[in-house]
Image (tube, rainbow, N blue to C red; front, side, top):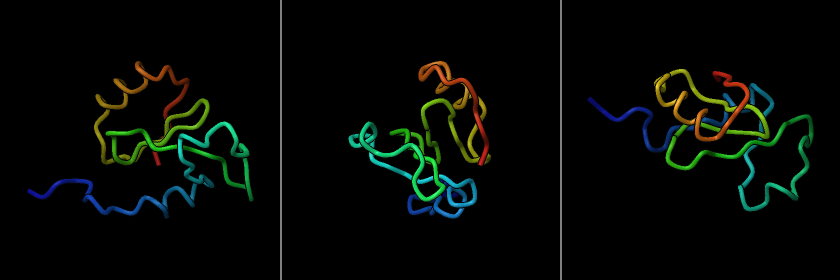
Length: 83
């Protein structure tokens, strides 16, 4: 069985649909929260398909709930939203 998600999987369309834009964690504090109607998020390292803004963890539904709960506990997020 092949790995899922594929290494080169494009999450762009789902992020676009939710009006999200990916910014690098290093520039998080200097980026505007909302730019051109899109809210900033950053990738969670080691968890493909997971993105976080200041209070919400966004993830794709093909990933396991157990991982969601683990990340929420570690990152202390207030809400998880499936993309």
